[in-house]
Image 1 (cartoon, rainbow over the protein chains, first blue to last red):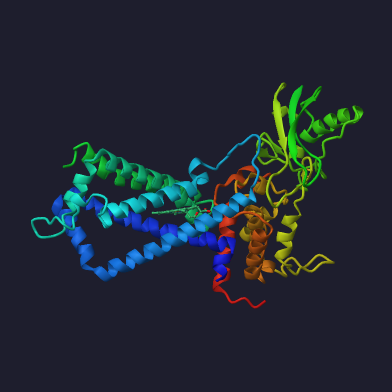
Image 2 (cartoon, each protein chain N blue to C red; image 1 turned 60 degrees about the vertical axis):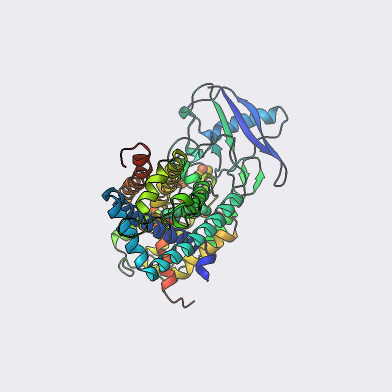
Length: 223
Length: 250
Ligand code: HEM
Ligand code: FES
């Protein structure tokens, strides 16, 4: 397939897969916010998700496929880019490249590590089996996701892992959002400042939103 | 003005290179950067040493030959300025100045500060040709070009192919250069013919010449002596996507 061989084609794959994962991340944040509605909120939400198992499977497979493509081409592009610039300068100056833009591969790989831990923790529930929602049911006979989350985030290290995880994802997105918009060509001089600003607002919302769960529970603001 | 220079010296393409220290004495603030180097070279020649080899041609900021990285920035600290148009008044007496060649895999060093930038020519050649009548001035209304399109095409056509974008890019990508060439022609009726083929051939050639991929650091735009904008890269990306949805008949 030509798209996979061309430099711009590969970038478009990065952009589309990245943007799709970003959309999932936003939906995930909104869904998780149902925890602030108490046990009934998030347990209802979780039960509804699992009720539609074909849909859930389709979303999971799509995300797995897109994430694999994203990691594969992200690594390939980075290796080629490093090979194209074997030597730096004695005086190293960046005029517009940022810490985030220069470390996409490292923030990306750390996000991958975080995703694996997150799946083992909350999806497969193997890291803390004693609080698994598979085993504990709430008053209405549903998996007690609420209690699992609350008990988890009372542990300092688990809460910290999540804050760091979403912090690194935020760093990745602080470059990724505007980059993916530029890559698919949706950029003009008029809308560029708007793209930069809205990308900034979006990644900050994502970071603050996700880290609010572990922080609120760890500090006991939310019980 | 008296300055201390740290200049990249390299005897040949596959020879090792390193920074060497030189004193530039009695420099007038009105001199251009290249004239300052001329003075240093005269001193070196008098002492029987090998002068510093550097590229230059027009010395008026239009040919794009003068390729030096000054204190870490291609073409130096002055915005939208080529090395030949950079004047010593932008430096202070006693300054230390680091002078290095453009670094990228696709730009092998020939000697000292001179690099081989012909990879850019090959990217351009990969784009093929457009047909335009030469000879007598054409009838003004023979090919209609809306003013707004002409403006954008002229902005893109300002690119002098100096390669500063490649030198500045952490990925050694020639995306801004390629985008300027693609956008220049894609905005004109003459370039519409073969536009799909052109964008594919040029981006393929870019990769095959050993340039990296764009990851939107926008360093290129910051150093471009002609103010070519990264919005042209967005235009290239759109042209590429369009090329994937059209049937090419070439
Ligand atoms: C939830 C997970 C992730 C999301 C939402 C995400 C999102 C994004 C977005 C939107 C971009 C911008 C695409 C573009 O420049 O056009 C991007 C770029 C990138 N991502 Fe991710 N990403 C995620 C995970 C990962 C992982 C696990 C890796 C591991 C390799 C990774 C590596 C990269 C790299 C290297 C780039 C820069 C590509 C380039 O510009 O050359 N990402 N990501
Ligand atoms: S020598 Fe021609 S642009 Fe500098």
